[in-house]
Image (cartoon, helix red, strand yellow):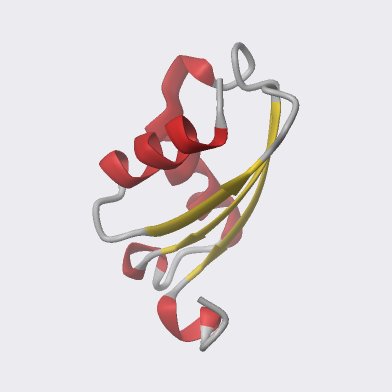
Length: 79
């Protein structure tokens, strides 16, 4: 597994998202996901939305994924 594949899967599942994924060891990753669809949702719901885009890979090929999820307004000019 690699960061680019994870980014692509998240973007497919959340088409409006801007996604940055980092991880060098092939099993532990960090992702920053900015999406309008997160508006009005609590962090746990946002994380579940991202995990849903990865399906069975979570806990298998992807051992750990640290997430930062924000709306475009929350992200501000850090994108």
